[in-house]
Image (cartoon, rainbow, N blue to C red; front, top):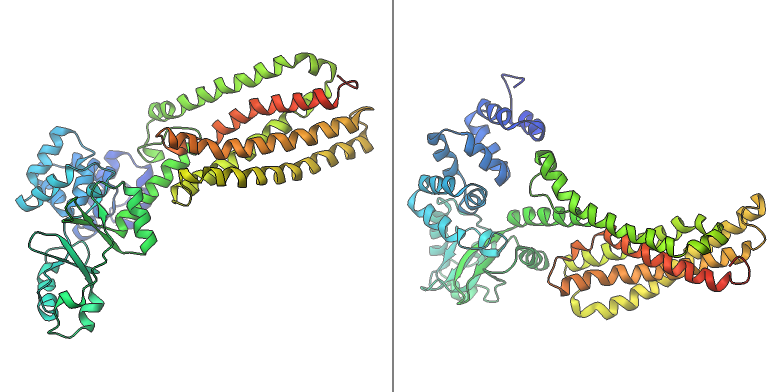
Length: 437
């Protein structure tokens, strides 16, 4: 490592490009206070790598530094043997909490929640509640923005904020001041749906309950930030026409990177072969009217671009919960109108371009007006078809039970390329019959 006075900020700046040995060496140079904060700020994947490099005694200290939900994230990324070792290093109460969390799916609310939260009983007075919260705060609670009121069976009965507690009279009972219409999520709910609940109600934390209404933990805003970031990264990578990476870009091995990209790339390549097949089908038309070949890239790229736009808009709207499966007909009508309008815009540009080039360069022969009309009408048809097809593909994929992000922009472009050629040459056969064809 370069510097004997390495700081946490220095190490954070170069962290992505360091090897595992260099990372651990730099981490060991930090002071205890800096190392604690630095370790807690690492991703779960990096934390698991650091723990694997440490001697057994040090490993015990660092795994105990983590909150139960963070410890679960680390344990889900290590081998079964190492998981058992790390579980054994935890104290008994934390081990019980972590084991309970491991029973949930990683991407469910139960796997995301923290079991450490402030809880009160409805029969407490405000003064008793504040004293009790002081005691709980010493137990490293996840958050104390809200205190959840539960009965003897741990059923969620209400919620109070610190602001409400300090504003109320000392002798007032919590049962009289708590809010009973508590927003909560079931423990099996998908993490992205949890994120939407927190965003919709503008919450700092949301309680997680089981089927009987017992509170099991809370999901906080900082947990959701990581969920949203990870989900957005996966969607963007899928939209680019590849499988999502499980690790950061610079930490992904070359073989793994190629494997993630090759499958979709090969599928898209095979799909583009259909474009060559379509071109060969219209070989005679192209031979008689070579000028048609000049506009093939223009036609198919316009259809692919319009389809990619529509797909991206619908996938994002689905991710945000703005569009449901039942809305498909409304989307069809909107995108049909949009496609026609966009097609007309491009048709006017294409038509004007051909007339302009013919005026100054005489590029397209005596039937230039029919050629311009062919391109213009084809653009309207191809762009409209691309827009409608691109908007409907995410609905079909969601209906089949898959992630709509799999309807990637390159996939839509490939689909529209083939159909765009068919539209183009079909229009040409009608408009240019008796002239060039």
